Image: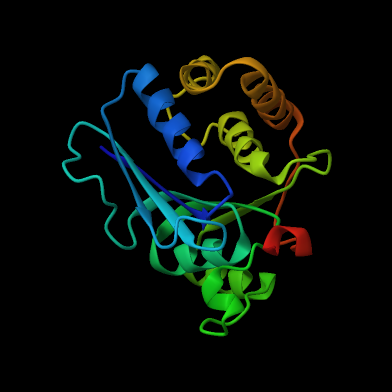
Length: 208
């Protein structure tokens, strides 16, 4: 039986690092894993998507539409898009409480999304929605570690333990980078607030 994780955000948010940590953590836990990243514009403002599939019967790294067990978004617009197209009924959507407007929204090609849109789709698809934010976070590039800590704290990746996430981080980071990211991960894992259907903040500094 497989488990599918779909991750989305915009360039500059660290989706690639989050995906690689989850991939290695699942591997450390002894699972067979396939993963692939797909990029729009891989710079700040461009859409970045990662697929992660766990299980012995998984042959393609791409998750079919509507088959994600867990959708992770690092900003509300891409979280909403993924909720519409990738979440299956009964799945979980977790997204960081922030708004990095994707390029398509800034150019007026797609509408801006509010929390009401997510609430309506949540009810329609019977998806559990978890909204995450760390008010102590001073570096938006580590929002991915806040999400990672909550995934671990809530056990959203079945069979993957804290030690597996930490081993994965040690594979990919060292020195001060490892220390700072691990600190954010541990804080979120142990104490990270998870709200549901709460307002989403927009930061002008995120959109520069």
